[in-house]
Image 1 (cartoon, rainbow, N blue to C red):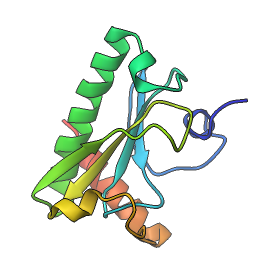
Image 2: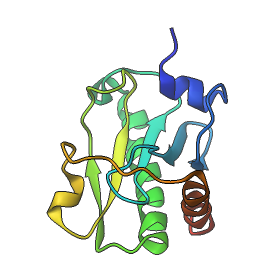
Image 3: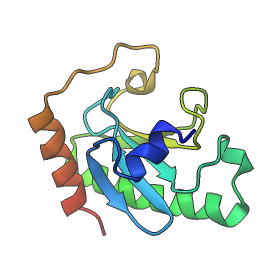
Image 4: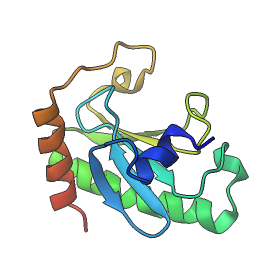
Length: 131
């Protein structure tokens, strides 16, 4: 059975897409730690990030960098933090979390509940700032 991320990539589940190319996909986390929290995934469904082929892992990192730089221009933050947990969904992914304080990337914190319109605005801002 396809992972929820594969179903998002295939358009079976709606998302707030911020970037896509032939190998990678980035979209807003709908239960974010901070406004602008983005998930970056390879389109190839591989459970564990360190099981990705070297070139796919390297490309994922470069793709995530582009998304992170766009997030920095779109959301007030000091930096964009990077986290790989790998337990929530059996599909390799990187969390990009806008940071103003170290606590902003604490995954045990309550998640934000944003309205659809706000998520759409954030996604559009990030898309406009992609290089």
